Image 1 (cartoon, rainbow, N blue to C red):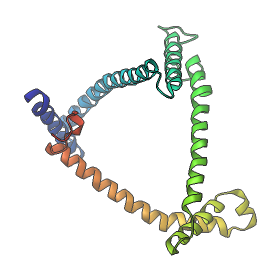
Image 2 (tube, helix red, strand yellow):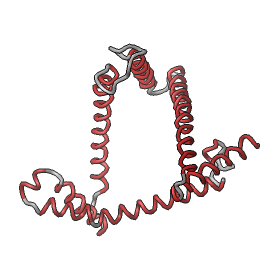
Image 3 (spheres, rainbow, N blue to C red):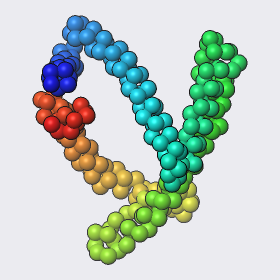
Image 4 (cartoon, helix red, strand yellow):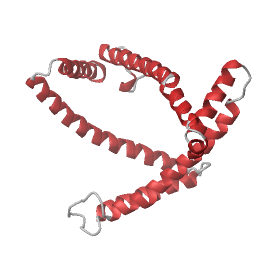
Length: 218
């Protein structure tokens, strides 16, 4: 109980309070402590990444072994991971022990010509799904839905070059909608998110929220 609950809670409380105090009292001692904690966070984050990779590969291994629906995608996960690891280790043309420049390497080519196009494709498909959902949602069933529909049409039409060719009023109307009612609602949402983050942080520091320890709320 001591090692599984008390000590982790004390570590979270002490480090959280010291980091909080440093934001208001930037003393050299607290600054040095924060720098040391940042180094430790990077080390722990590296180990956590290894654990996450192991968990991911283990899950896809189980799916392939059991021939679950969609197990072919799991095979592509292994192929992609193996290709990236091999390319990163080979480090062509500098070799495994050579320098690792930011661009001009085979790893950079692999990323720019495989990862970036695949990501663009996924986001393009996401745009079509969003358009389909918007078409089903923006129906003038009542006054609020009608206002939402009109505002959405004005903003979308005001963002295409054709609207500026027809009249400058469309881009200005879109800017007004984005900078006034949309910004007001956005600030309200951000304020709520900030208050929620503060509340969650206080719960973690006080030991009330313990889900990060893997034992639920116990």
